[in-house]
Amino acid sequence: MPLPATASASVVTAPSTSELRDVPLPDVAAGAGLLRVEATGVCGTDVRDYPRPELPSRVMGHEIVGTIERMGNEARLRWPVSEGDRVLLEEYLPCGQCPSCRSGDYRLCPATDIVHNAEAVRYGATPITREPGLWGGYAQYLYLHPRTVFHRVDPSVDPMHLTLAIPLSNGYEWAYRVGGVGPGACCVVLGPGQQGLACVVAAKMAGACPVLVTGMGRDARRLGIARALGADVAVNVEDQDLTEVVRQATGGAMASVVVDTAAGDAVTTSAAFRVLRQGGTLVLAARQKQPIQFEINQVRDKALAVRGVRGHSYQAVEWALGLLASGWEGTEALGGAVFALKEIDDALAAAGNGEVVHACVDPWR
Image 1 (cartoon, rainbow, N blue to C red):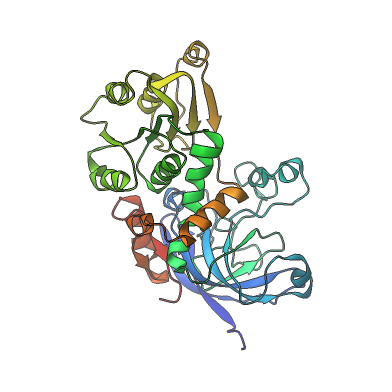
Image 2 (tube, one colour):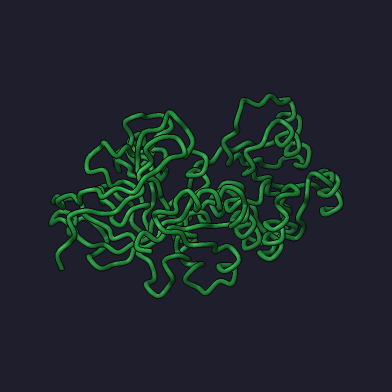
């Protein structure tokens, strides 16, 4: 079936401003391909980055599910997928050769590390001026770079549900693989956004008990969802003393792991140190809005481990996809509204103000 000459895409043209454009579909090179996008999740980083004036014009969206439309001859030999397969993509486009890639930490590969390398490429963050322009999931078609990381997915699962795989994989990576939660461990999750709720899911499935999640008065709905997903205690930190709540919930043993997804301030960080037990682990998942000072002797005196995390591993995404394919009941609790390309502003607003837990974009809507 012949392809159209262009794809409709939502292009960020200025801070907090986007417009629909018809972007030419590229010729499919030997080592590349083309994806027909079915659904793309709205990530918290999209909400955070949309107003940033220093970022380039681009097609956002990196929680991408679609069907492989075309593959070049070399791609057919190298890629573990075929035309017609439904796949989930990771945002990373790693080189495959550097020490980070060889050790499995390809999300830190310089070729795709946009934090430290201005020339790095990844889905949802690459300038539209870089050929062929279709680098994000808020479009009907996506250019498949030769270094794409694929996950073949169960075709019976709703693509809108599959967009939950990336946030769920973050929760698994941060709470379980890095934080090390396990049976009987107390895990405190700071922040009830989609990443924080994913940490709740992973911690409960790993056997952590009790699991506590924090939020503010405006987060009442999300705190309720956290309870539905298995959180033992939901704490409104505006009305309750978190330290005392953790002490009571653990019989004085305090928390084994704290995962900070809240992007808070010195108050949040201080609270994390206070509720950790001796030998506990603090996992820093949120990018803070400004430098934070804290008493570093707390780390020494309590023999704490402090771990920074960015993104997810391949194994974590596979775990999340398996969970979604299993008929897991939490899917409906986390699922949210579906928006059209012309409604990107509404989608970002809904995800940012807590109206929905997880929004996604259907580019054919």
